[in-house]
Image 1 (cartoon, rainbow, N blue to C red):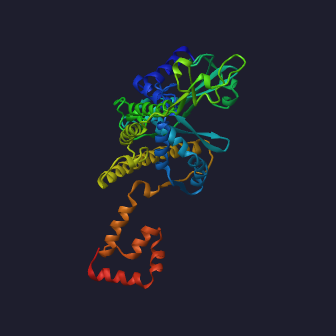
Image 2: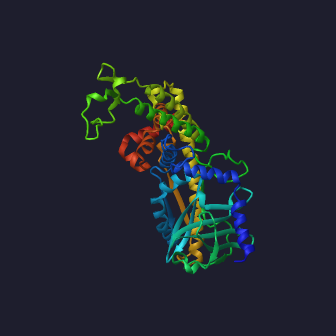
Image 3: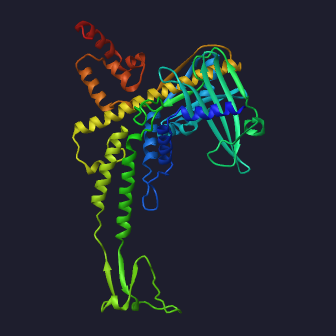
Length: 451
């Protein structure tokens, strides 16, 4: 690689993402890993970023089922796809925390595996009119013999086709790319091809799961933002308030202030204190006539907890979570309408997340299909990708049940239709379970003209 080509890659990695977005991604990553800039010996962590990301990932992928159906090509793709689903929740959590996740397939022998690339190792530099990433650099690092090896994999979709370039670099200093070295000198990357050109490709060969929140950090950037991007300052305040609570208990620990004449002495003439946490020494002058006095201060934990709970509720609102996900609902009186609105906000957020995940997985399967044809891994053929999520996560099940009961009572909904919805039965199963009642209700509905 010439110096000009190397400098081009460096500039692409810098220019594709604004400084604001790079700083924000670093902050979100540090918060997730409990290394936020405000955390020190005095400010302890509640681990809220990890908890928020984990909960949203859980809601998004709860009881998720997806499969690829069709002929031989579809069966092969599904065989490679199912292992991805088994570890999806963990990586969706990383994507939620850092704003996005790239799912990049690659061929390993006669199978297709998927590499999950987190936001801090993903450098997009080219986008189409819809904001879809069409050019990106992916970074991978390994440490060996006190050296840092970095592999840059550059993808670009253009009119001339799809180009993939692999380059390796070595450095002894963190944060520096260093000098280029041949791929074959690193065992893990020795089988990689330095350059690949693919024709007849109209979409990038990776799927991008993007958190579907508006980007308030950089409104011109098509990248996603963390699920807690709008609550970063509140999370800082929550950590500080939690630290105040810990200090309240630590500083308010019961103690006995005892005159040092009440203790036996060691060979050096020092008082032998049986429990330094419980006993505090007083000099003879300080102790006066009393050998000891009790110190049991009144704790203010109730007020501190109420303050912490108020902050947690604001965090829940800013992150699209229902009240009670992080906060204690017993501290605040809420109306039924507030509860309903809170849950609806969470339902809407989860629904949007599931749609974004579907889109990312659809692009992943499309990329896997292209690789399957390119490497002749399975016969040509069509496939169908299906998704099924737990409806109770994104719908108010109790409200829907009450609504269908009303429809059933008014004759608009038939009993066998109700059974199909409630028990998940087929039409035949539901009618057989009801027996003659199903036929009678059907005739009655036709006679009355109900619909």
